Length: 418
Image (cartoon, rainbow, N blue to C red; front, side, top):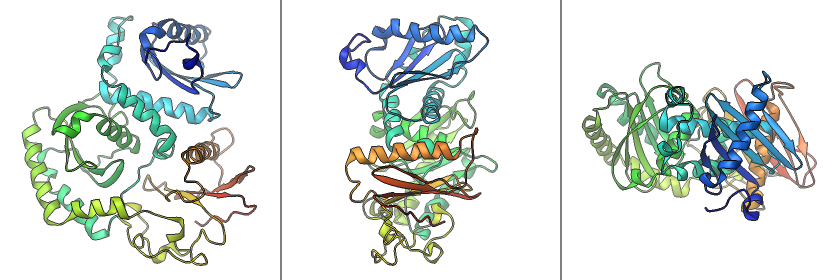
């Protein structure tokens, strides 16, 4: 916590994130005390200003093994210094999420404070939110939603999910803009007013804010928030109630006086969820319904519907033989499948020999790289790519409706099923 840029341990860190103002005032630092890094922040600000004074915009700088990525958002500068070999596109996307998290807490109207006072100190407004940013940075290494810009659903029987959705639909007349029923980072049901859509990045940032803030867990809460993708300038109000350690309901409204109305709505929803055993099924799914490669049949249409949010058949079935499962003869060990149409993804559980956290982290970085390459604006988009090193091969494919990524170790041939 008390490291500064002169500390050897601080310099050994492989990935730094900084948020600073255009006057060089430090706002956030992943490592160390941002106030002790004031000189370093001023240097970063000077680099950005030097380039912008030349009527240009700085994107990144390479210095040896380090890549320094810049994201300028009006008076707010975000910087990542990384030696993790992640792509520029991947790191820039992470900075975009960091900025989105700032907006979720403060809204874009914070820019007006800088217009009134260029030396405005924004750090106090984010006081106590370090844990929120640390959680988001951690997610960038472990949560595919951070680079897929999609959300995943908790596997449930179709009847159970329909019961949950019906309970949320009943509160449409109570002034609720969005009702979001989740288990950790997984969506159980999402209901919005007609023509109102919730972007996957907003779901990610909202869930991160709720799950990393202990106050939401200890009592029902009513907090102003901003959905940066939905409306970056406007505040909404989030009513949050945890049914248990993992499962919670979020009701979003534009009304600042809606707490008691939403409290009553939550009570009605909870009553329906209990009577229909939805909460019990959610807990069962959380501990039992994991998707393994060996459980996925070759003919996906025989056991799964086209919408991941509503599909659950087959997830509780007995493991298939190696000849029946797509992973058997092909040697597939892990996959991520994204539905472009639904903005949803599903991924298999980690299996041997990628149970080691270091291997899992390396796997996600490889996914990030190949996904960025597939959608590179300069050379792409590509329909198919094949990549291989001494440990693994991977073959992502892209169609207008889906982007499955499959992963295989120690093989020369990979088969992609789509």
